[in-house]
Length: 150
Ligand code: IDP
Ligand code: MG
Image 1: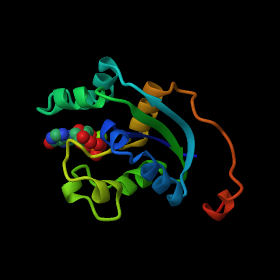
Image 2 (image 1 turned 30 degrees about the vertical axis):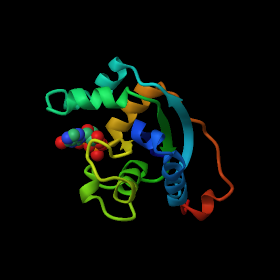
Image 3 (image 1 turned 60 degrees about the horizontal axis):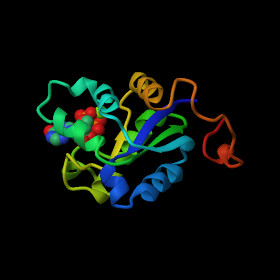
């Protein structure tokens, strides 16, 4: 089953929105298989956001993500990568639809509350970076059959 990496960024933790993020992904039907509150190091932040190294916002992004604790998670489910991104909403909260996490809780692109992998390859890379390649529990929920037709 597909897995994706999601993190509540420092702004989401400080604002007390951890539960909101988790609740929305749970309600969607995705299954939480790993969770860890952590302080991101400068080197992990740089590696995680490596694709943006040339962008003008890179330095600010790296210092922000390592400025205070985050909550790192692995979520599992059919189309988990795309569904988590859709539940989060557009990168810029100003353009994110109401009903999405960013559309309901954010106004600024540099404070958009959550991170979610943007592809299966990115999910594997980011899960490896934050948790290690074999992380994530295998377990069934009694209601799985009511969420995904086998
Ligand atoms: P994503 O988080 O939706 O995948 P990316 O384009 O991968 O968006 O950008 C990573 C993060 O960098 C964004 O979530 C946002 O926090 C920050 N970011 C992206 N573009 C800008 C910008 O133009 N100014 C400031 N921060 C930005
Ligand atoms: Mg991205």
